[in-house]
Length: 95
Length: 228
Image 1 (cartoon, rainbow over the protein chains, first blue to last red):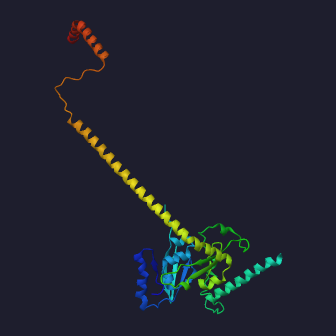
Image 2 (image 1 turned 120 degrees about the vertical axis):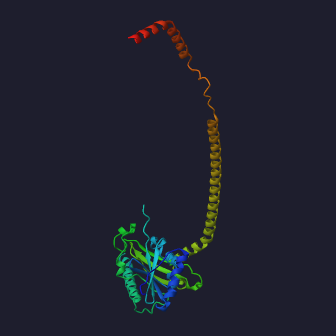
Image 3 (image 1 turned 135 degrees about the vertical axis):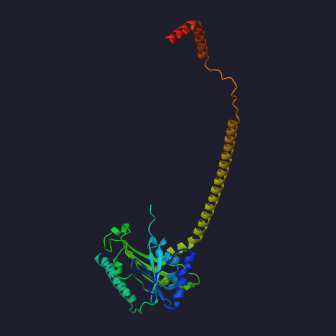
């Protein structure tokens, strides 16, 4: 179950998903003790796991540096005790 | 003065060395000397070489010379999250050039604030002072916007009602006209309507008269014609 990717979106219903998944996986994976925020294979910040799970917090963190953070999605995976949040840019609307 | 210009360069070089050391410390080595720094974070030195080519800023075209390119250093005071104690507010310090990922460090606001220069303190004080005023302005803007939206809504409803009323009255008129057309009776036994052009009428009458005068001959010829 390592490297499992969980995509979080802004909707409230789906925001609860990673928490739920993390609970489900708690028996197989250790609780993350730290988190990394990545974008384009670069580690930008290291945060507390609860900070990294808060997508609004991540947006506020990243927006001054990456304007794409406003609409970006965040994909989550866990490697050992490190929660990795990767910012995924949304494609611009076609047309 | 050459010495003065050389000093900052040396400092920069020293700083970059320190920064590199801090990056290495992140990788697992210890750094006991930095008490106030909660976490020293920076992008990986090798991955930091790749910059996003999709982004195009004016600063991307700048030379790769520290003196000639824009160096962006930011202090980002992160908001306190729910339940987070006041004295644990985080500050992110970042530095970057071009479109490369920023080097980042974290520190608590309480640790950083005594070391900040007066210029930054004065800017932050201005922000704090103006926040109340800005909040009031924002509320006023929101209220004005709400009123504008309400007025627009009322106006559109009024127009819609007027349009509906107009269309219904037009429909009534059309209905009446249609009913009138349908209810008009045509008397098949009634004589045909008189011609409107009096000249034609008189000409027709004259012709008729002429025809009457020559009628016997015409009839004779016609008889002859029929005879042949």
